[in-house]
Length: 76
Image (cartoon, rainbow, N blue to C red; front, top):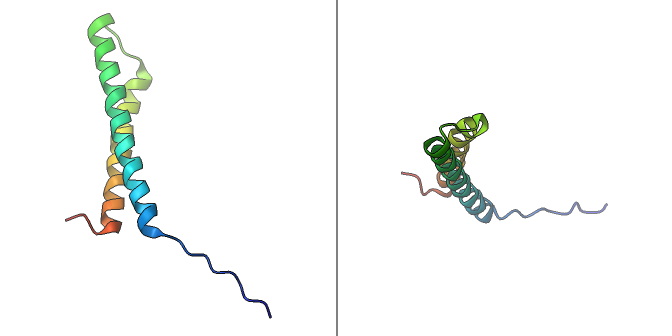
């Protein structure tokens, strides 16, 4: 009988990467929000996509970062 290969996963590196992705999503969402607010101030209108994408990206990023911190044991 042949042995099945084992798969070793570095979970700490995975969760650290998820934490960085979450922070990136938050930064992207804030950037889109600033762009939408600036366009509203300058030309008086903003794109509807910016209106929904910014809070969604911040929310997803916060959730992803929270889950990663919880898995790493850094969340108090």
